[in-house]
Image 1 (cartoon, one colour):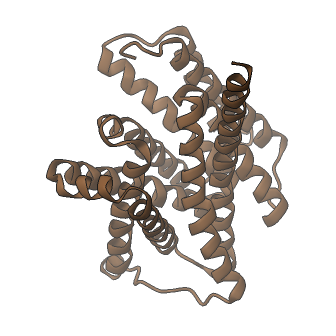
Image 2 (spheres, rainbow, N blue to C red):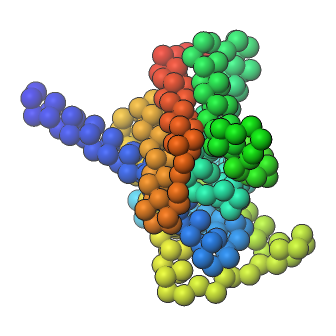
Image 3 (cartoon, rainbow, N blue to C red):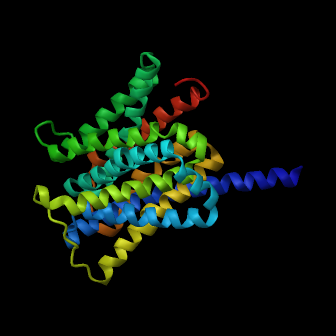
Length: 316
């Protein structure tokens, strides 16, 4: 019995470590995107297409080796294919492209922290779906999110915007896209499991991203592959293999071990990871207002996900 307890305890802590590392690697992907945009003039459309299609192909290869029969059954189910297409095209792809656009307007740390507002949108959706008013924790979470956004955007100066209006608008779009891909695939996860759904959804989103990049000439953004040197291509490979494929794989594995509530809490390592990577690698300088905003945003995420823990097993 003691040996069994030790095994499950060890497995639990390994799950926590996997979720923490995976969430931090999402922050790493933001720093990579900022580096490619600033150093090589890479467009958000190119970065999104490269990372999503590359990671989708890696997911597909792993799934065909480890869960071939399961994946083939999913591909033969037309209803499942349609839902996967919606997940990839309307959820995962918009979340990636809008995030990269926010990085272009701001920086990796700011974009990643603002992305956490997606959890607030999930909370609002739950209120509408259950026809219940927000609870006290939920209202406090909204206040924290708005205060954090104000601090980051204005540097605590109402007369100045540290983040362009375009960056704020794209961050709202990003939060909505993140909320959609969190809420929408609930039944798919229950039927097929999170890893196959995420992998095939990523591949579908990658195809959409590739199509949008190739069609960019229609709105004045022709598809151009940046003139990368060896370092540039290495960063592209890193954002595909580490910042997208490994990040999703590790994080989802951790969630499968420790559960969705603890996993969502551990996911708040993402903004901290982005901040650290941006500061150490890209030399981004954060002010006191930035750090205060980051702290409030992380506190909001903990508060909102803590409410999810309190209501787990209920409709909300």
